[in-house]
Image (cartoon, rainbow, N blue to C red; front, side, top):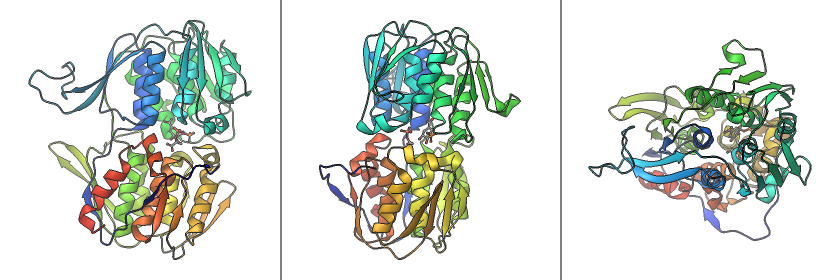
Amino acid sequence: MTESSVQPALWPAPYASGAVEATVTVPGSKSVTNRGLVLAALAAEPGWLRRPLRSRDSLLMAEALRALGVGIEETVSSSSSTSSAGSADGTTTGEAWRVIPSGLHGPARVDVGNAGTVMRFLPPVATLADGPVRFDGDPRSYERPLHSVIDALRVLGARIDDDNRGSLPLTVHGGGALEGGPVEIDASASSQFVSALLLSGARFNQGVEVRHVGATLPSLPHIRMTVDMLRAAGAQVDEPETGGEPNVWRVSSGALLGRDLTVEPDLSNAQPFLAAALVTGGRVTVPDWPVRTTQPGDALREIFTAMGGRCEFTETAEGTSLTFTGTGRIHGVDLDLSEVGELTPGIAAVAALADSPSTLRGVAHLRLHETDRLAALTKEINELGGDVTETADGLHIRPRPLHGGVFHTYEDHRMATAGSIIGLVVNGVEIENVGTTAKTLPDFPRMWTDMLAGAGA
Ligand SMILES: O=C(O)C1=C[C@@H](OP(=O)(O)O)[C@@H](O)[C@H](O)C1
Ligand SMILES: C=C(OP(=O)(O)O)C(=O)O
C-alpha cells in the first residue's frame, strides 16, 4: 500500500438520495477472457472470443500474446457462432476477437502491468517460444509473488533469469518446447500459480502434474474455472474434485481445440451494482447472469442475501437475468472468504454500513493483491469514521456512522468501487483516481452515474 506522489484527480462519489432502480449490463469476465486468450493462443486451430472484456488487464494479455506472434483480430461480429467477422446483413451484436495461433517467437517483451493473470499465466507460455521473452510491469508487480511459478518452471525444464530472485522483472529463455512432468508448488499465496501451470500444461512434452504442498489454497473457484475451460478445449485433466488425489492436478499432453467462446459477464464486477441495491434499499437487474458458472462472484447471491437483500432469476427471450433487491436493512456477517477473496473489498464496504459487526476471514493473501487490501480497507474506512481492525487473516468491522472524506485507492480497482459503494449513502466521499477501475471495468464512472440517474443522484 504505497500512496503515489502525484495527486490524482478526486472523483466525487455520487450520493443516492433514493433507492437505486436500474438494469446494468456488466462487461465480460476478466478471468474468463484472459484464460480464453491463453488457451486460444495455444490451440491447434483458430478460435473466437465473443463479448470479451476490453480492459487494461485483458488488453495487456492480448498485446503480450501478439508480441509472441499470435494473431488477435478485434472485430464487431454477429452472434452466430459460424459467421465470420461483420455479418453480411450488417447485424452487429457485440465485439468478438478472432485468435489465430502460430509458432511462438522470441525475442519479445511483455508488459504485465499489475495483472496477476498476465504475470502468472504467461511465463509458462513463454517457455514454448523460440527465444527470450522479457517480462516487466508496474512497480507493484515486483512485489507480487511469482516465485512458485518460476521455481516450478525450472523444475519442468525452463531457463529463467530473475534479476529480483523470485519476482519481476525476469526473462524466460524459451527453447521452443518444455519437457514438463511432475512438480510440487506452494500455492498458498495465489491460486493463479496452479492455474498458470495447468493452462500451458497440455503443450508440454509430458503434460504437467501439479501437487500443491502449502497449508492453504485460496480462490478454488478460479482453479475450477481453469479446469473447466481446459476440458472445454479438449484437454484431458485429472483433478481432486472429480475423483483425483487431493491437491493434485494433472493435464495430459495433447492438442487444444480452437473454441467459439462467449464470455460471461464479470460477476465480481457486478458486485458494486448489487451492493448499490443492498445499501439503498433499491433494485438492480444484471442481464445474462450465468445459471451455471465457476466465477466466484456467483457467491454474491448468497452473501448479499445473508447481508439483507434477496435475489431472483428471471427468464427472458434474451437469457437469464438476476434481480437483486435491497430490503433497507443491512446485516453484519461472519464469513470465510478464502474461496472468493476478490469480493472482500465490496463486502467490507457494505459491512461498514451494516446494523451489526462483521468478521471476514481466510483472506491473508489479499495483502499481496493490487495493494495490501486489508491495510488499505482498514485505513480508508477508518478515515471516514469507521472502526475496522485487521486480524491475522482478515478484517473485523464494527459499523459506525461515517462521514465524507477522500477515499484513497492505491491503484486498486476494487478499492475504487468499494469507496463508491460507501459514497452512495455517505455524503461527501471523494474517490482518489477512479480511473484505476480501468484494470477490469474502464467504464465504471459512467455506468455508476447511469445506474443512479433514476435515483436522484
Ligand atoms: O485466476 C484468476 O483469474 C484469479 C484468481 C484469484 O487470484 P488469487 O488466488 O491470487 O486471489 C483472484 O483474486 C483474481 O482476481 C483472479
Ligand atoms: C486480485 C485481483 O486481480 P489480479 O488478477 O491482478 O490478481 C482482482 O481483480 O481482484
